[in-house]
Length: 460
Image (cartoon, rainbow, N blue to C red; front, top):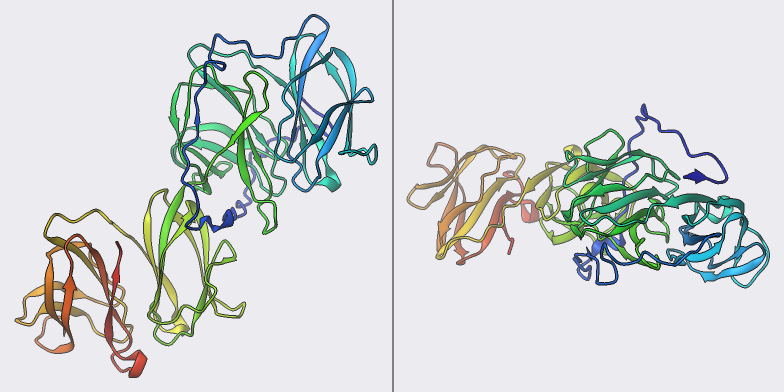
């Protein structure tokens, strides 16, 4: 294995730079497909099939994979003749048989002989397989050349990894979680790791900063079968540009020109404006604005699909760059969360709660109470006869989701441990099978929109 245009970067075991936050891929809005890619081998891809192309003595097999994110489609010339025409970003040319020995490789924009953006002399061993990766931005494009061990295993799958995202620091690739086993360790830009063998099965791959267990990027599970040979490539950029960070799996069996994209695992977050004196706000996820109109007190966004992993959440005064909340949230794949902007504007903060949306039993509803009135004392939530439903809740306290009989309730908010009624809550309807959060809002000393009250969120 070798690297052209610069030696393979050394591993930086003492790297302490925190990983740049992975951008949201198109914010994974409601139209996002929760895909499960199965890289099982077809009849043409099993352990007994040829790996192609057929090379005879005096020949090698070479393919090119284009990962230079802002480069146009390119032509690849071998010893002056076009061998691969018009290869687009993200594509693989597939393997072609070429004469062994020293070959001159030139890469230029499709249909043009100039400029030559990559030129390399490759020493190709007889009947060996190679992949040439075009990497980095067009202005600094280069080639990473790897020898490919494509011989399939009858009982295992084989996977290797290339880091081709130029603005991403070194990473670990783990299995199942940030605390899971490390498959590839401390991989820097332009590093390509050797194939490792993994048992057939379903895997969740997780990206963490090198040496860390923080989940920055989590993928939906994939299934791999024995006999499969794969090259996993992280490409694109982390910056807020047109070249989304993505991970593509190239299938090295047979022609070597097919691939599938990993999909990012998803969590859901519901954001609530519960700061009584704060203006309307904008919500940003990894610096991408979510809402086109101001979120005002005491409204909420409903659940938003958000990429799992470590996400940066900002709350800005709407229409300005003034950030009043800046939090990094670790969101688990498939998790549901409520994020409350709480307290007076001068002390505004985020209260983040995990939401257990387990279906209630027949005839029941699940209810949680959250105390979000900053000047109100600790309270009990009671029936009108004084029976306590939720007791001794101070500001920012919250309860678990609690099963209650479906029906309509007249509730009261009382000063904790007393008969003093601070607020009547008549006609609270709890439907069979529904999950609710009831939160105290506003100010005890407030009036109008800021008056002490309660709001209800229906989670399902």
